[in-house]
Length: 288
Ligand SMILES: [Zn+2]
Image (cartoon, rainbow, N blue to C red; front, top):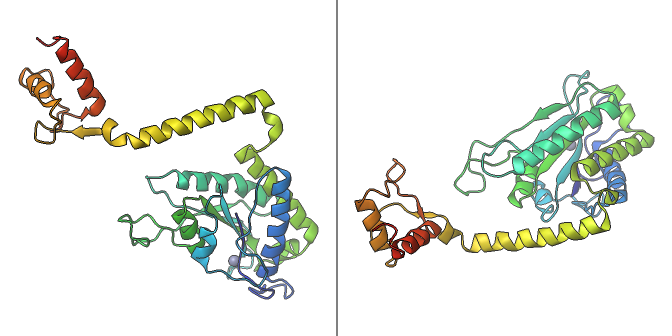
């Protein structure tokens, strides 16, 4: 899902080249990048249907629902006219999901591509988390940037791509040349194709069939594991009334005889499966 940053024809005028407006560049680049990605077999959406449509920032991110990646396209501004480095703003580490890793991987892949094609200084990677529980899920793990917050809320890794600075004359002139934007779009699409391996020719028909069969099996298994997670997961820590009736006598017996000792942290760590095995062994009189 591509988000052409801002809206309209005259948003964020360059301070150094009066004819440049960021909102024009992002709209043009998004169209070119969409086309280039489609050539690589991607399905590509835009967060807005017209140049004037201006969805709210978190809504732009949420429009990525169901997509593999959300990219918000921009050029940056600085009080230092010499600044040229592309900025790649990715998810901050959350220690819970792999969305932050996938966001950073996309940023790290695209960064050198942008700096090389644009001939700028090295890319700069940046993250900005909130210091409060923005979505109220009980964790302080939310993104400060509205577009990234929105994308994360629908489970999609996101990156803001700042294509150098429209406060730098050289970069601004570069971004005003459509041929340059063509090259930039091609290079970014190629990089993403490598990252997502969409190229069909990499797999034979037989391999594709085997892969889709395997994927279906994994999906099925995942569903079963999720459905039975409560039963499979560790639930029983003590001999108490929570222990199922069918397992209680065996567990009590094994605790009393010292066969079950727990993990030293006040828990027996008994899973449903483990208890079934112990009960079967008990019935076979293994412990007598
Ligand atoms: Zn912008």
